[in-house]
Amino acid sequence: MARPWNFSAGPSALPETVLAQAAAEMLDWHGCGMSVMEMSHRGSEFVQICTEAEQDLRALLGVSDDYAVMFMQGGATAENAIVPMNLLGVRPAKKADFVLTGTWSVKSHKECQRYGDAAVAASSGVGAVIGGREQAPFTWVPPPSEWRVRPDASYLHLCSNETIGGVEFMDWPRPADLGTPDVNLVVDVSSHFLSRPLPIERTGMVFAGAQKNAGPAGVTIVIVRRDLIGQALPVCPSAFDYANVASERSMFNTPPTYAIYIAGLVFKWLRDRGGLVVMERENIAKAEALYGHFSESAFYRLPVHPSVRSRMNVPFFLPDAALDAQFLQGAQARGLMQLKGHKSVGGMRASIYNAMPLAGVQALIDYLKDFERTYG
Image 1 (spheres, rainbow, N blue to C red):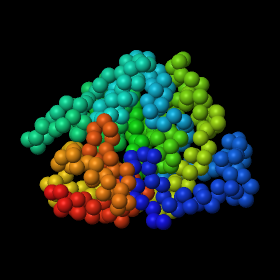
Image 2 (cartoon, helix red, strand yellow):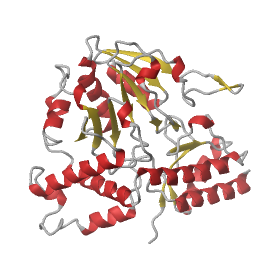
Image 3 (cartoon, rainbow, N blue to C red):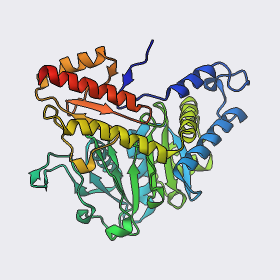
Image 4 (cartoon, one colour):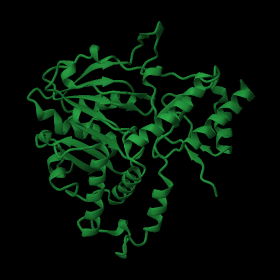
């Protein structure tokens, strides 16, 4: 049976070779007689799995030993609370600033308000005039020259790819360029993690839920500069204190072992394909093909400003919402799955993560053309 093209925003498609290897090793990992699901997280077999996963991830992203790499639980949503509990205390004022560009950065800001002084440095939640046209909320990125970052803030938070809205930062500013060299950049990279090289060295920390490009739901990848570790607020649970997790190499408590194993297989798959430079090239080709079709069509509407359109998450709208059900039904009949937009915004959304090949994007383009010919 042919596998459908899965455009889910997450949990998302995994590479078939990774799934096949996991299936082959399900009952017996490398001759040890155990499934990874059955292993002690402190046994030599799983320690090897976790160590290799960390090493491969460091190699893919060029992460130096100045940073701790941790595999944690709770997803990026939980990390919205874990970050301020760990990093607000880095500076005496216990402040954090946020650039709001969509649903996830708004959620991060709201969560931080529970633990300290969380301010908005910039927001695209109101319309701006770009190229003579007023932009809808959360469809653009405020220019860094307009960000109001407090010099005594512990960190500045960005969501560099808004999964729901399809807005992507194509570059990250250095705090020094903002006039605040002592402020640490913290970036939620969940939905474009491992889709391209990332300038980790500009940041104090990045974090990502794995279930987009890095593996299954259940593990959160945290990369944090070591000098920021060890100043958690007293309210921080011990299992979420970066000092504890880093010192125990992600083994302070039982980690999500099978999710780490699958993520490790994904890292090896990326390495064997040539790394993130190659992956970025493929992702650009897919995005250009899909956006190129939309640019030639007057039938579909794209809300996001062209300069910040995500390569990973492509939201689009039909001319009449009454056609949505027919569009989804027809897509499913052709093996194009999970194209319904997020419930908060409606419309459609195609997530074209690393595991989606160009052939899947072309299949979607063919369907878009046929649907427009029928209903346009």
